[in-house]
Length: 231
Image 1: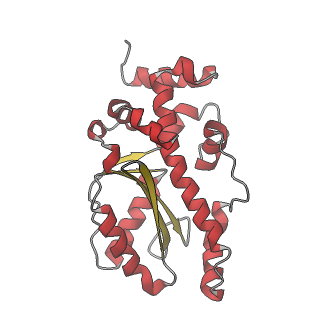
Image 2 (image 1 turned 180 degrees about the horizontal axis):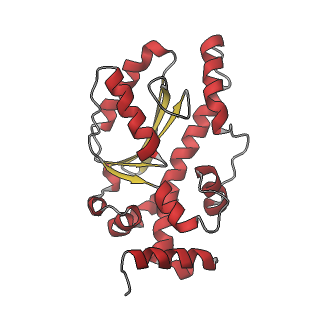
């Protein structure tokens, strides 16, 4: 199912993102990125302790997760992440324009380093999710969109707001059993990013055959009207 994303046109992705640069997006040169942090507000005191990166390589979808076992490993994490990101030109996130990427840039600066992923094509799925589903869903958080749109049910998932405390407990005890759930949470976020790109593109390209909800079709009509697409 993940490979359905290759049926998504760059033109549709560009329209969803409202970014003409994404007409040049190449899925094979795109990373799907999600971070887990020591706080949800950002700022200089917030560390990224886990970065998950997914990408397509041949006939496989690969996920790498970079974990900071203690604060003194931050530079090593950022350096290893840089080596991977240097191979890509585009990034897909969920609220990454506001949170993940600015925080990453801040951590690189605080560490005296430069991030290799400079001015990438950025497809932040939060914004098209709001335009498509805010009229129908109680919220457009990734967990809600997963459940209601992708029909993904997470069993025994750790809530995002608990993740910082789980990491702090790990730092104190070095008991990694609870951290395993955070890795699984991060992995599912990345897989959902891939599936959500496909779902959005299929919906916009053929709404009558890809939704049973009149409100979704209304939202797509509003999007087309804003873009002056009347054909």
